[in-house]
Length: 479
Image (cartoon, rainbow, N blue to C red; front, side, top):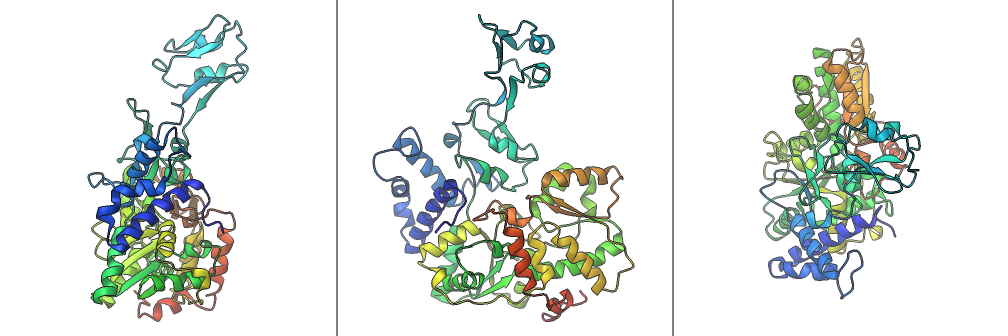
């Protein structure tokens, strides 16, 4: 039964499971130093040069699974000792070099970084090279190419560079939007998102022991594309089996946001969405002149969590979804009063297994909060469809919606650049940092192509509801 896309995810899961298991058993403090030996048993290395290095890296993974470096505000961290197998990168000369006598590469190099050996083969001095790429452009054999590390290639905001002393990946927090693209892409699992799984274990244990509060799980609509080895209703039953009092759809928050955002858009004439925290962070860091155009609505997660807290002030709320950036969002002062912690689907899977919850053996429970339009927020284009429907339901069809649904941060950059220059023809930017939308989030178990279809199928189960129907049940219509 395959639960993950890659073995890197499996390794991460093994660490999370070990930490959560000892936390649940109450012996984490005394066993924490033994966990690397549990994860890397025996005397033979399987992934690294020696078993000792494997265990040293495992120890760093354990720290991140326990919350990571508290002095680093970012939820994305690099394990330096695990980041030493990728090539330095930059422009290199390959086997296609024929040792020609034209030496065009040498002629165009502005820093004299190219030399030749006795066979007239070109070589690039990394100390002098400024990576302008001129040599690659003039080589008639395409023998010069730029090698980019997977993490750098995955990061579309230019937040990752190479530390000149350690050669490890270095994250610039002033640029990073915590989308987690580097986390999922790194072939060695050297870049990891901090886990708050210990906080959730503590809340579950306390709720069970004292009954002091009810623990609510707010689940992202992209859950419909995850846990493909079981039925969605069994996943919901499994979450309750862990000790959560109630499971509520973040999609209901999406209905609330769509309804309010439609009114805000009609009033202001131009708007960018506020649902994706990585996209919002990107605007703040790279397009500050557009900050005033960000929708003033909280994200669906925060919106429904606020409703829960307003209704039940003693409640605790945990968000469960595919997004590493949500772990940053819950720390914002405007959101932190409503969300007590956040888990990814990877971390939820670890909790299921630690507490011996076999979801395939459970009866199906149901989620029946949101409309079709709230549920399709999980994929690119869904928010735009929902806002269009909300304008109709609000009686504001006279406002002509011209949406620009941005699928991934590169598409977001293009739209925001046009908007900043006043040449964007659309009046609503739906920004999704991950390709495909939330279904492409770094914390997903699987990133298979059928994800979009699964989300639409999940949404169609609520087709009989309008957005107004969904929010009216909770006394929220017209707000």
